[in-house]
Image 1 (spheres, rainbow, N blue to C red):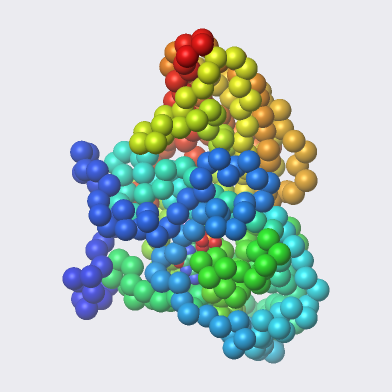
Image 2 (cartoon, rainbow, N blue to C red; image 1 turned 90 degrees about the vertical axis):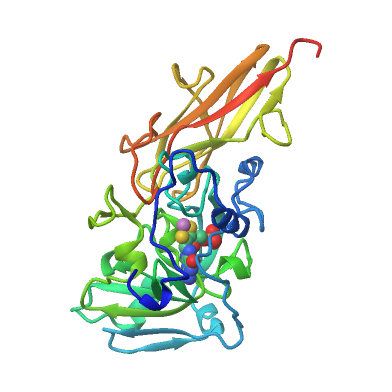
Length: 373
Ligand SMILES: Nc1nc2c(c(=O)[nH]1)N[C@H]1C(S)=C(S)[C@@H](COP(=O)(O)O)O[C@H]1N2
Ligand SMILES: [Mo]
C-alpha cells in the first residue's frame, strides 16, 4: 500500500484461504469482465460482444470527434493526431488472438484473489489501424530512447497506487516488422466498441492482453525503462510478493475445444449420445506457430493427433478437429497444443502468485447416455 489515503479502499494482493470460495468482490469483477462462451470458438473471428473483456478501472468517456493521440518525449517532432489523422495513413489489418494473462487463475491452488477467470478469457479479432512504427518514424525516435510508454484514458487505484493505466514496450518491440504493433481504430471492420478501447487502442500481436493498451491517448518515448505499476508491480511471474520476478510477455500455447453435445444448465456438464462425435476448437501460441494439437479421451493418459486447418494468420488461433466414438458412461476429454519451439501445456500447472501465463490442459467432463436414451 503506497498511499495511506487509499488504506480503506484498496487492498494488497492476497491468496484465498484453502476452503475460501469466490468472494463478492471477485464476483463483481467477473460480472463486469466477461469471457468467451466456449461455443464461440466455432468462429474464425469472434463476433462483436463475444470477445472477452477486461477493464481494470472504468470504461472512460470517449468522443472520437475530439480524441487526440499525442506522441512525445524523446522524439524529434512531437505529434498530436485525431482519429481522422490516423485514418489518413495507409491502413493495415491483422487478425490477432488476444488472451488475458490471468486466464485460468481461478483454477490455481491457492487461488490469487483477482479477476477469477476459468479458461475462456480469449478472443480473435481483425484489428485495423496504423503500424506504430509508421507513427514513430514520423515522430523521429531519438537515439537515447529505450522504451515507449503507452497511457490509456482510464484512471483508478490498484493496490493503493492511484494511476492511469500504463504499459511500455522496448523501442525494438515497438518498431518490429513482425509482429507489427498497431495503433488500431477498428475491430472487425467497425469502430472500436467502448469496452475494447474506443476510439484508439494498441494491439501487440502475440502478447498477453495487458500490453494492448485501450483508450490510448499518449505515447511517450523515454530514456529509462518504465517502472509504472502495471509494468513493475503487476504482471510479473513471482513466487513471493517482494521478489522482482519475470515480466509477463508473450502468450503460452493453449488449445480449447467447443464443448461437445449439450450442457446441463447449472453444472454445465456435457451430455452426448453414443456414436461418433466431432471434436473441434482452436489452438494458439504467441511464442511460435502452433505445430500440433492432440486430444485425449481418458483424462490425459493417452493422446491422439488432431487435424489442423492451414495457418493463414500467424498471430491468430488455428482451427483443429478430431473424431471421438462416444460410448455410454462418464468421460473426460482433454486437448493440448504444442508450438514450433516445443512449448506445450502442462497437466499440472506450475504456480505463481499473480496467477499469470498459466495454460493448464483443458478437461471437459462428458456424460454419454445409454444407447436409445
Ligand atoms: N487502458 C487500458 N487498457 C487495457 C486494460 C485496462 O484496464 N485499461 N486492460 C488490459 C488487459 S489486462 C487486457 S486482458 C486487455 C483486454 O482487452 P479486451 O477487453 O479488448 O479483450 O486489455 C488491456 N488493456
Ligand atoms: Mo488481462
